[in-house]
Amino acid sequence: MIRTLLCLALCLTAVPALVSAATPNEQTERQSSVAKRTFILEDIEIHGLEGTDRAKVLDTLDLDIGETMDQSTLVEAVAALKAAGLFERVDDYTRPGSERGRIILVLEIVDRKPRGSDISMRMGAGNSDNDGWYWIPLQLDFGKVGHENTNFGARFALGYRFTELSATLRRNFGPRQRSWWGVTAATRNSRRYYVLDGLEVDHGVGRDFIGLDIGQHLASRWTLVAQFRKETATPDPYARYADTSEFRGVDDGENIPLLDLPDDIQAVIGRSERLVFDGALAYDARHQQQIAFSPTGGLWAGLRFRSTHEHGTSTPMVSLDVRSYRSMLGGVMSWRARGAVTGDEAPFYDRLYLGGLYTVRGVPSHGLTEPGGGTWLWNSSLEFRAPLSGDAAKPRLAGSVFVDVGQSEAAVQPDGRDLAASLGWGLRWRLFGIILGADLAVPVTGSPVEELFHGNMSIGWSF
Image 1: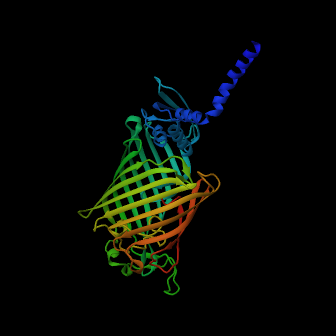
Image 2: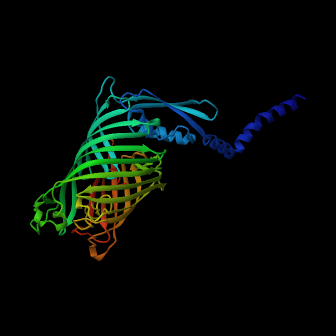
Image 3: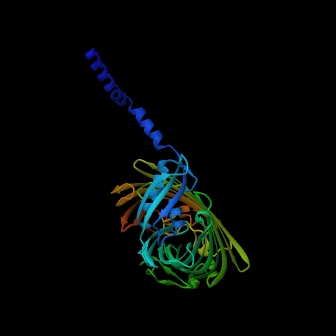
């Protein structure tokens, strides 16, 4: 009897272990099912804010109250907020909501702004859909002005061949502060490049404007922005050579008199007062997780419309920009396609040019379009990016290989071809939190200047 009872006890003890060891797949499936269980985000509580608006936190977090999600979506969103670098520290936890299946996200924030200070100073980098990446060596945030949701700030920015000094007053309003209006005053100097008689030319254009901005986050991934501004555009009455040519006796920086410039450029030289309406609709479904500074998946798309009113005429411009990302082979395959069209009345500094860092990288900036510019273009790029050294998401060094193609009106058509293409490779390295880069490309279909390859310096990736 005792022997029988001992055998039975041993069997009962062994059965759970045997079942557990024999069914690892079933356990994994159960764990995966639990991890993907969905819940409703009932509310977001934020504690510790001092110099940053709640709306800024919610915009960066990109979660909607009432949204149904799983644990991985919530973790990615909080990780993106922490990675944005807005705060000294962000602690997070959840607690049960008003009923089963609902949770409340709680964020405990330690702001970078010193206690008792009304002015904060910082530096960094940004990215504009219109201008690409730019560096901000100085930004001043003056804090709240008269109202909790009203802020004033000023900054100095260095971008891809432009410098800008601007000041902005912005106020958030509406449910969850997802709408805003603002007033912006800015002065900018842009360097417009084109190729003249086989040499790269730099033409300065100054712009001063004051504008009213209105924006709305329509949903978790859609944003609508509009700006009405009064602008003064002043192109320089001369251009400068951006190359040195001993054969032609030309030095880098040498002035080109107005009368030696093309007729369509001469015709628009002078101070121009105009009213501009700018509108943009953007969709952003890019993944927060990154490899080599790039989203591991998702899509970004932007539709932009501009109307310029000057001398009794209106000149429209419409552009569509689509970018997608997909992780593969330890890196990210990224793709971009863009098309734009504008009116015949547009001056050269508002026209469309092909060639350079943001279109076809194997030729100088704007080198594939005649100096006066075109009224339409399209371009597309396919680029594979991968980490070379350090952390996979934000490595010390990353590399890429790419191919660019494009066409434009008023094309220079090197070697008699209408379609332009280039192949190349690039490097990106992280220095003091800013991503610096260099691209080297070969013009497959020829170049308007005498060079076998072309190099570009950048901040971040070109898209």
